[in-house]
Image (cartoon, rainbow, N blue to C red):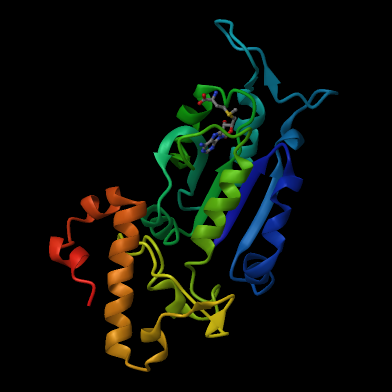
Length: 242
Ligand code: SAM
């Protein structure tokens, strides 16, 4: 998969050199490039922002550098890349969206700063890109870089070969609308707290049933909205702890 990130703070994306994503880049599974938006300016101060028309606080990112940057990134491609513009007013990012994005060949990320990017950039970009505005959640960050780190990590780990054991993806939270069950490792008793007996029983059927019940209870307690959204949970599942 090819990924291009455009930002005025390229160093913010340095963590994408670490851990499994960094390894995937070195292994050639991810072709990830970070571009400095200021390289697409032509004035002495490398200006990327200006005051908003209509007044108001803050600055707005100018259209010209974005237009040049996005044209440059898409210059050598035949298919329409997907352009992801992080923004608090976008579609909430979910595991389902991560799965969908993981099927694309080329993702481009435009990191906004200040009060955001001049609206005309979105309209112009739609001629060459499939444009998606994506929100990390209902809160406001200073810039799109943190959102890009989260989105790239969630998408890249779904690509074949990025996670060593692909089985670990199957039962994770949000894969089927439920949260994951609690997990434990050695020692069997720590700080006076024992691992649940069933996990030491060796009875795979009982362990699977216990884990399913834990998933239901945990989801009901922490994210009841998910249970209602999936609509697949029988009321009895939550009361029958066997
Ligand atoms: N004035 C904008 C508004 O109220 O919608 C917020 C601008 S914010 C200070 C600057 C940049 O941070 C945005 O352009 C976007 O790139 C990023 N950002 C802020 N919150 C975000 C969120 N919840 N999800 C994704 N990106 C976000």
